[in-house]
Amino acid sequence: MIRSIIFPRVLGKSLDDLQSALDLFRALGFAPGNEWHEGGSHGVEMLAPSGGIEFIAAPNVPGVDAMVEVSDAELAYEIVKKLGENPHPSKGSLGGAPITIRREIADTPYGARLFEVETGGLRIGFLTYAKKPGATRGLEASLNAARKRFAIVVSRFNSFITERLLDGALQALRQCGAKSEDITIAHVPGSFEIPAAARQLAVTKKYNAILCIGCLLRGDTLHYEVIANEVTRGVGQSAQETGVPHAFAVLTCDTLQQAIDRAGLKSGNKGFEAGLAAVEMATLRDKVKGRRRRPRAEKQSDPGTPTPSGAGNEQDR
Picture 1 (cartoon, rainbow, N blue to C red):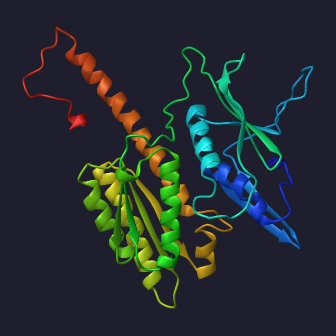
Picture 2 (picture 1 turned 60 degrees about the horizontal axis):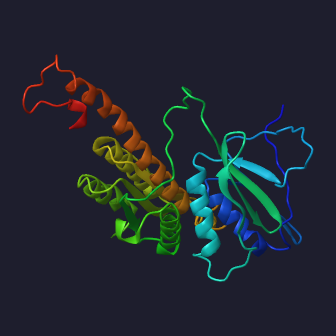
Picture 3 (picture 1 turned 30 degrees about the horizontal axis):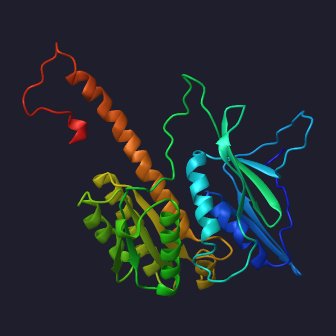
């Protein structure tokens, strides 16, 4: 019967007061959920992939209001530090309580890596549990963009929306550790031209991931459906045939208001979400490639199995 658990917290009296907390949770991968407005009150859900209630027997009350498990506590710590040093990079002086690290990252007696943050009176712990020897959770990608290169293809059509999506994508990449000189931005006339440009960039093999940004608004003819289908198909085909991850941030909306909501308002910033997806897929690709190369190295180290000159594993070409 239970579908989800919601812990309401009052962080201020206006939407502006929520911005720091919303930035923090978005930066760490939470997805925006329901949003409501009633009189002078506002509520914005931030959704995690999973959750639960932990029951504790202890002499002292925990010093946090919530505990969040992340895949990489070290990277989450660096992202939070940057948010604290440079609050709201895309919002100027827009308000919100400051983000303060209340407990530096450290190991715990129960085998986790933990740090604690406070914003607007809300205190949150972020931790990564140590894996038991021999245990595996499969391939897990981290949000670490350091030493990786990214290309962004952005449509000039509906630039009122696409420029905001671009800002969100750049914010996500930089918060994950990407340097400005490792990000290439290619502007194209409209969304229809995105797949061709994305493929041209992907085949150079210079980039770890490609981000595709555009905005299509439904009109009175079939033009919207035709373009939307071709762009989606073209981007997917480019990713599959080149092997380079492509993150998709081409909005397909019925109205301009829907697009505005997805470019930084009610529904978050889809460019920011695409930036996180690009980083995660780039690191996952590296891990998959690393696993594929291992058997090849073992084979070559076997003195009883000679390898002809110039021969190699077909998968690595």
